[in-house]
Image (cartoon, rainbow, N blue to C red; front, side):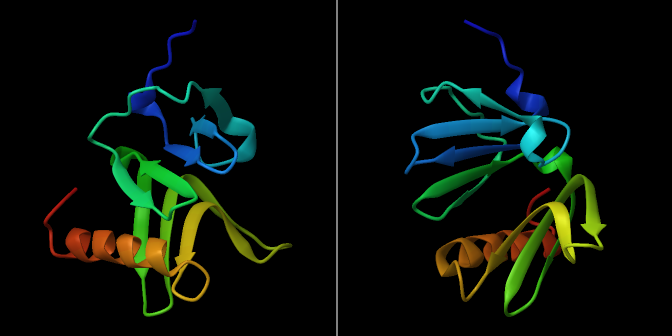
Length: 120
């Protein structure tokens, strides 16, 4: 048994295919993940993006910025950076309309509500 303060987690990733739930602390990086019990209760204050296989519970206080266009939604967390060698952003979630339309639509609705000031 262990105590985990999920209120400070950056993101909780629940993979239904693998029956695996990971909580990320200090940024969205593989080395910052710890496995948590599948039946762990997750607070309502997290934003949820559910793409069938994986559910993402996003801590809004750990989000640096959200940007979107007709093709993709980017959710960057504290400590994100651009990796010049791999030419990609690290420490962020990216949902594309082409590769993951369900998650993209949910993330875009989230983005729209943030821009309108309907949520924080």
